[in-house]
Image (cartoon, rainbow, N blue to C red; front, side, top):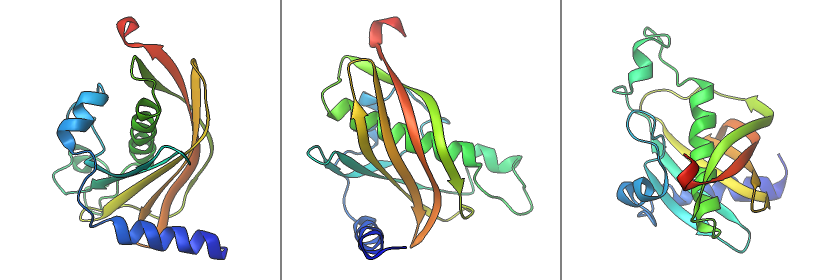
Length: 165
């Protein structure tokens, strides 16, 4: 890991205790997801110039997927971590001005699952915009627990007008 990456990871850890920039009510106003599929608890930071976003998911034993995903040694399914990252990216796309559209998760590139996420973990969700257009978007994303990368990937989105959903 290079020095710049280490600095970014340290900054993400520092911000995990910050008060939310967008709370659950605000997230519900942006995303169409509802329980149990809403996988972002709060947004801590948005930088529209970079563009980047930092969200958080507190993983609890009460999550419905833990009942069947290795109940004796529960870990959060990797596809749900990708979904949490996609939801965070969708919020970034919304904040970039695409408020009349919904970002539909379209593709995953170069996904790497590096370490398990367990009940009690605080999952930090970071996405950085690569490209946005009126029809699509793409972000580079990473989910971290403490200083460990849990998942990293590039995620693609189709942008669809809300009335078509």
